[in-house]
Image 1 (tube, rainbow, N blue to C red):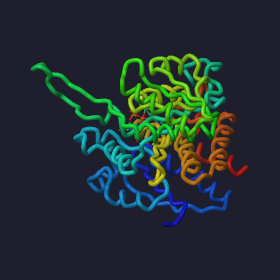
Image 2: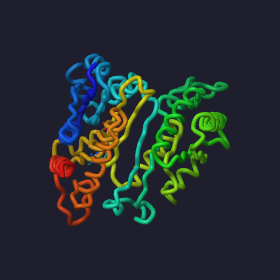
Image 3: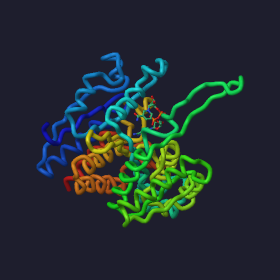
Length: 361
Ligand code: NAD
């Protein structure tokens, strides 16, 4: 396989618009670094249902075997909302993660100083926040069996089961340690060990893993209810957080919203490195603004930065992109989702141009 292959999945709604802007940025990176990427495009989500009758068609699955990383925009839209669950665009995304054994979701929540006033929290609380949340993605209560409607002693009831195997915990804790080693070497594991046996097990395995393999890391533990409070009270105390699927689902959204806008947030879903990772904005396909040039392309552009860093060890180039975004925001350029009162917003494509231009300067 040739190196430097990226599979683009523009998907639905604003997906194709923001993908175009990420490509502009990638072109500049190619120029600056004298590298070239082989880019392929494939179908996922609603577009794939319309064209192939499947939200993750076999042609796309085949492309996954030929690539080093996947850059996904977003899927879904009103048109497909009434399909049965199994046939919905969202199923394509879940199957993609499964196909690539992506067991960890990494979400940075970094507050840009120029946008500190866009948060619902006070500037002094959030200015400088830079948190990385690692959420376990393929285990825990969302997948445990038995599940579903049942009956207990003749009375109707419903259940879900939270299960974690030792290996599932070890592999995500190791992943979190690797991230922490690149940052402040501080890791906070979030659980509910005072009530749940599975959480006590999570804590025991986490302690053992860090002690055995990452003795330089300063490991702390926090109960999930306290973590939810502390994220609002004093988010700057956190650097890297690692947690299970259910708690991570909630805490990663909470930490994301510290930054003020969903249009700014990238994410990565990765496995053990033997298969490509998926890099995508946290937001959805925003069908309410699709095709109007209003979408903020920053989350997609920062997802590209995460891709370059994680899949191609291009840390310097990822930083260049992050700095360019920061600079453009400092200059006062805003898409409509982040425009303060009295500021005339620029379009999706103008924002992409500004970031690409700033990269060359
Ligand atoms: P959404 O994230 O698409 O939109 C929520 C709100 O944020 C909307 O008002 C939208 O206009 C705004 N928004 C989102 N991204 C933006 C951007 N880049 N710039 C400016 N504004 C932005 O969530 P939703 O409305 O709940 O879902 C819409 C569709 O997206 C649904 O079909 C849903 O299933 C799908 N979805 C997909 C993903 C994904 O692809 N990973 C994630 C979440 C939702």
